[in-house]
Picture: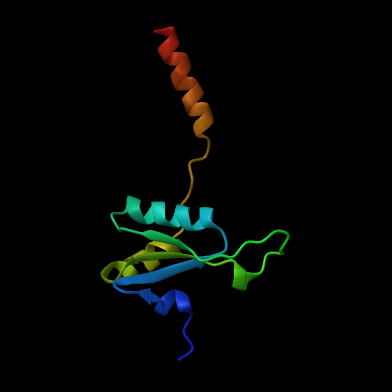
Length: 101
């Protein structure tokens, strides 16, 4: 079998649903899953020693979820999630309105 580790890797009852190169990417994915009610953990297995170029084998951060939610988590992460267009203007307008009151 030649499956990707992100589809088959597991740690006990937790399955790897994503592998990325940066902790912030994994944290954003975990936040998305938690927002949908799926418990998620981030495992940073990267090795850093400066100066080292960005080498995939040395930079591995995994997102894990309970085994029973792995399929749903992969589906959610595969879906596109649009970000709000311009929340800064909305915040400024709300502040202006409250100061005018």
